[in-house]
Length: 555
Ligand code: ATP
Image: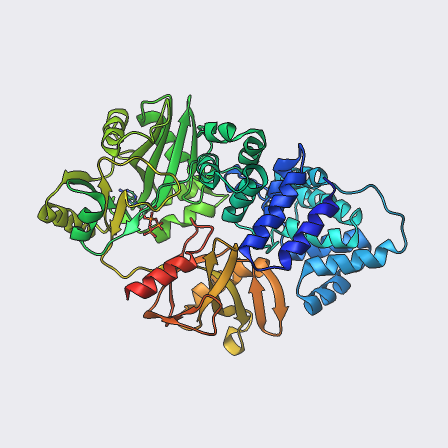
């Protein structure tokens, strides 16, 4: 498909807020695509690779300024000036390419396939936005693409490489558009199921083009992450039993990080809750699993918990989170913050286990986990129908410094991707919110040079947009401000006076006094006195508007 056809779609998508309209715009596009349907689907979401593919473009706004300058021969400072004026590098690229095209003949037309090939090529050149050799080549590759684009194409190529499309196309819309394009609006549930298993719209789209049987036959594949089953929240043990049934399993809820661990003939892969591949960051997890799990092929659901290397006491997630994004000094960090793997569920053992009852999955898990070393031990787990026994377990968990308990239905299947009531969490403390920083202000006086007054955003999966829910202005230490500035600066997409807008990539856990309704914030809610608790490096996406709404109702 010619890239100009995608550009048309982008413009149509931008011109409407309606989910239904976006769905039918995409359905039209998907129908037109041929063998390149997988590429077209990915590009239409503005997300070129599934998160688990461990591919990162690593192009910051600052690098893009250089790229546009290289592509158009216009000086970097001129590009920057126009960027400051327009606030969007896509528009800058468009305007500058326009200026340039008046003096040259058009080259060959861009296609969706060409863009995808280039995206992959650039991502495979490795990460790091530093001044390395690969950075030079990367810049050249993208500049090439921009200089062979028509002006309007240049706008979207730029945004795609910056990973900042803001089209309002979330997973739900793509699922519905596939259903509309290939099955007259039917079978959305089957498509969702296939996506939960594969986390890859290229596979799902190809199957949709074949037949519904093909969609239904898509299954989980080992070494490719499955969406995790999530927990509902309850306030009392009694409510917990009412939801999951009696007797139930009661586990410690550890203050760690969820990891889905895949093993296949000695190869191990570790994925976060957001399905990012963190195998490289956790060589100790891979080792523990290789040595102490007796299974040729398995997928286990685990919590990774950090402990103090001196006294072996548990240490909170905040410390562990340092390991998640770290790409260097891994061996050193591994010693400073050692971890244990605590498996709590079994998703695959030679074959899919998700249709099996939790009771049977747990039994099998007990059989394959060899607990001779502390690096791999099952979670603390009991089965009971008595409230007092459950309460004892809860107190024990809290005394051990953990968050609370998780109650699980013994007879339930594993339901990927859902917050079904098959497991519930019970935590005594107020529910915090994980929010994205979507903007801020450059400080003044003593705080100049630091970004403060952080705008907090909650995620709306339907529209794939962030909506503001409050501003965190006070209570940040100098150290936190420094760290925040360091993280946010490369993510700036717009600057106006002291105000900045950033890509919503930094997720923070926030405490607050209460949630109020708000006519000013786009989410419709405002947090009173939000305070930063910690960075959530393990998350890529903030809590949803729906969660804020539910918490508001529960107050
Ligand atoms: P939270 O922020 O409360 O950890 P979450 O949104 O990350 O919640 P939920 O599904 O709501 O995820 O809560 C369950 C989480 O609890 C799991 O994702 C997992 O990381 C963690 N957890 C800790 N111990 C267990 C356990 N024994 N069984 C299942 N999950 C556990």
